[in-house]
Image (cartoon, rainbow, N blue to C red):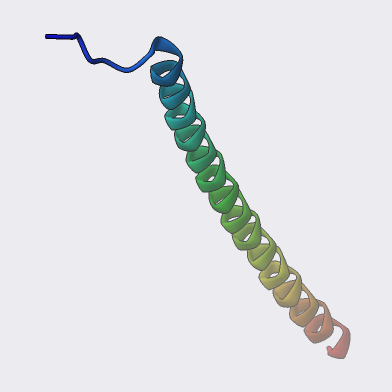
Length: 62
């Protein structure tokens, strides 16, 4: 009976492809997380600026 197994290069190619897909998924996840975090910081900054403008406007009226 013949020994039937995949050639080494096919195994290495498949392992490399799997690692590349996992790495791509991790990088995409990190980009999405960083973008969401940056948007949250921008929103917080806009809120603070809005409150500051209200306080400055109230002080100028008195």
